[in-house]
Image (cartoon, rainbow over all chains, first blue to last red; front, side, top):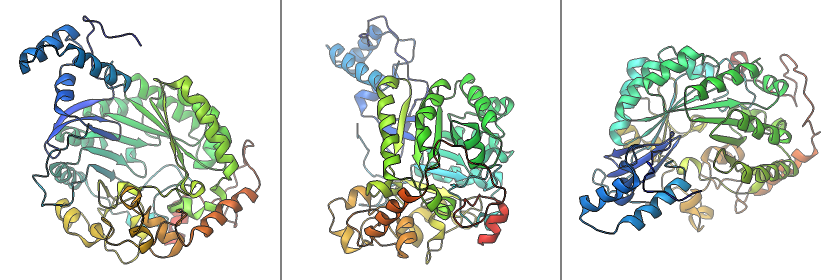
Length: 89
Length: 392
């Protein structure tokens, strides 16, 4: 598996759907017969995996939205794990 | 990854809402599988909920927090309002799963269901060979299922292939995996047969030997690395042979709610046969009160009901004492420790059943000739209306 490049545009895997669940009070990832509860950082990253936003833009957006510089390494690490689990492609 | 919110809507230490709603739309089915999990007397429950009643159930369960909805049966495609039901469920925010034999899934309906918002299709196969597939289901459906698999993939649905595994088809497991691969399935569920309903009736015929299971599992493990990232194989643990009680339904009345065709609300598919429990009907009760207040859903919740064997066991919160239906079928007491557990005082009987399975002639690999109406002892009893009436 090659590393994510700045210009890559991650998208949710075709069998996954993300939505806010009131009863869970968190975002969840739904897939055939299953559900994953997402913590806030995971949800914020996955929300931006829309197949149109580049990795560079995604990182910049998160940094400005949360007023935190240097999120790049954390975001890349999460994207790598998420791809390993087939949540994104 | 477990950032669950606080139970704002629950009382302290209260019961969590159901996450999974299984809508058994009908017990009608064009197939006659000898391992069907429907009740052996299913013809008694033919008074099906109508479209409006089902949608009300969906709305009530969704409002509580249920998020996965399985359309099952019987064969759910027998219902001509399936598209309408899927659309309603999708609009409510459910992830919608169709669990089907494929019979009736012509391209026109597969497209209409896609448009209605169906998220995923689980297609059952009985075997990799036409002979055995058609024998076990007592229908000619093998070629049809191949076509349906193509339709499902062409429309871009995630596809799970499900194959119930037992003495007859375990020797074919390699070919079943290759079939799933060639169909571009996303998941393959190798569901070692669970002995309920018709499968319980046919258990002596279906039960594989330990060595047949071990050989099949070795084949599965040999294929896994090659399929990494393409096809995920789920090997459902054969609990009789492995002596591992399953955490049935993740706990009674914990996450899973089944509504049977006639509206009976059940904690699992087969709970209805348990004596002494009155299962509430959605025609008479709101889903919320069924889940929270009915004695039936509370009966085996938590650990208070457990025998001393389970109550003193470190795994009691993990396996919940195994399966209540299995405990009842094997011991006559639904609150007993599941006898597949080596700690059960009745475990020797399960061991004896598995050992006896090794003595029965090996039928694997050779096609069996279909014997119409076979009813003699030692032969499979197929799921048919006539056989169901005979059970009632």
